[in-house]
Image (tube, rainbow, N blue to C red; front, side, top):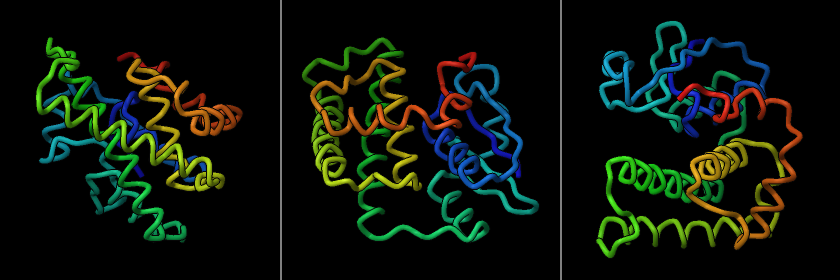
Length: 194
């Protein structure tokens, strides 16, 4: 298998961690998707998204699709409806934070009173509150795909300086409890060149 993406992407990291958790060998191509490797991304995925997974004749374009594929290939349990909902909330935070970061990098003031930014901030606030509650209920205790996605999202947001976990003690405690996992250091976005 060959995984294409960016070493700083939380969506790519979740697949890297999933493959590592299941002792699955793969090669990784790290692209600078907003720089010199943009043309490579255009060739690899018409949706211009990462990650992309190649496995023999199969080409898969999105982390959720890749997870479904790997679940079948590696005989992993599928997600329950509750887990699907939790993953949707995790992805909502991720998507909104990416929008805010790209807006900031485009020179826009994301704190001004503007519908697009207000909607992103509201989504993040409501979603983090739900994740805080679920963390308090122990919903992420198993190191499964939803926990991997939660960790990848939180660490990316911290890496980019987009959140602090002070107001979410359950998430903070859960996040800190994961720090000893061996594959986290290998996939840390802080080690990437970008």
